[in-house]
Image (cartoon, rainbow, N blue to C red; front, side, top):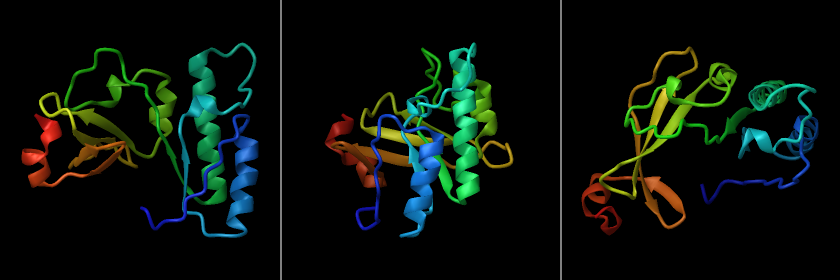
Amino acid sequence: MSNLPIYINDDPTIDTAKMRGEIARLKSRVKVDLVGLDYVNLLTDIAGSGNDNYQNTAIKAKRFRSVCREMNVAGLTIQSITKDGMKSLVPHLADMSGPAEVAVGADQVWFLVQDPDKKNMYELVPAKQRDGDRGSGSVSLIRKGLGFENATHRDETMYPGNK
């Protein structure tokens, strides 16, 4: 990834309309394949009066998905919406808190699950694929410093952070 061009917009007032404009501007200059959104609720869209937090989140997620489809780019959101106390190593969509529309509207849902015995080992577990079926085959990751890397068998058995 270090060789990929990455453009970051950290405007704290961004909403989906501004995002659409930024993506269009960027696409006029360079190829854009993916748009990442750190957290749906950071969008400043006014999702409607009288709506509760779940409804606002669902509306913002739907608008983000619409922008991505309109701009013909893949969209990725990172959410922290698991229920308190969820300890399953094989999480399911039912384990998510927040509005169901976020999971239902997503083409794919993945969970990042920490290995309880090896604190630097994680599994990226597919919970939903495009057609709604549960995916198979997780991705093993190891945390080294601030980032994650694909874990090798050697990492899993020898990395000192796993003790």
